[in-house]
Length: 294
Image: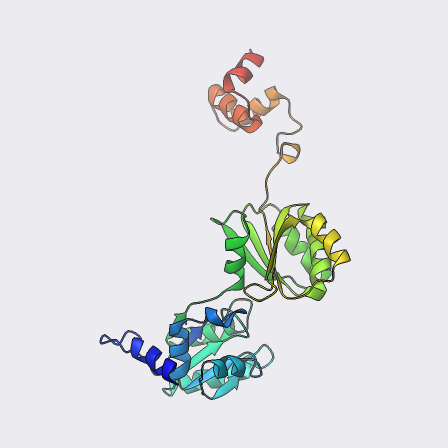
């Protein structure tokens, strides 16, 4: 296939930077939907390693066929990762090279590939990232929510008690929160989030990069109402705004202005600094608060 030869020539650099190294595990990101999101480097690596470890050996061949890649596949998924991981590591130690791919997106993110990477690192086997598509980051970039600080939570556990404890533990996290969810679990998850996190702004990102891609900016309550009338379809990324403290649940909400200032004074602040801090909390001019306390 001429296009493959052109890609290989593109990566045959004199410094050998893109040469496939023996005994190395390559963590290769693949498209989450649109096959055009495959990188040249990913095609090059998959075309030249000795074998490919795939989460789904029924799905990955479709991707390889699209790019004219023919390489031996071994299955590596949640229920065989312990035994198969040792086998892959042994082959790497014997000098073979391997590309790790997941069903879609970046391996080791909410994915059993995490354990293989950990095993290889512990054995001193070189691991090389080949970056590309990742549903969590893709959703964050189009969410319209705060992107400078975020926390990826992946799939929530289906155990009710554990799920509630987890949601309660992140309730006051001010970072944007990112979750994955399957369509048949979406309504229950949205309801649990509403019950534990409050009715926040969210971006529901569905079928990213695919024909039916949809990004909906809404709230938990509005999303529940919508999907009670419209059956959820496709894979979802839920991007949730971080916690924002309101005056109603602030620590000083039940304090008088004098008690608020005294709180800071008792903590070691000078009186004027305490007035300044209390005024900032209450979003009023410090001079106004000073006059009230004369």
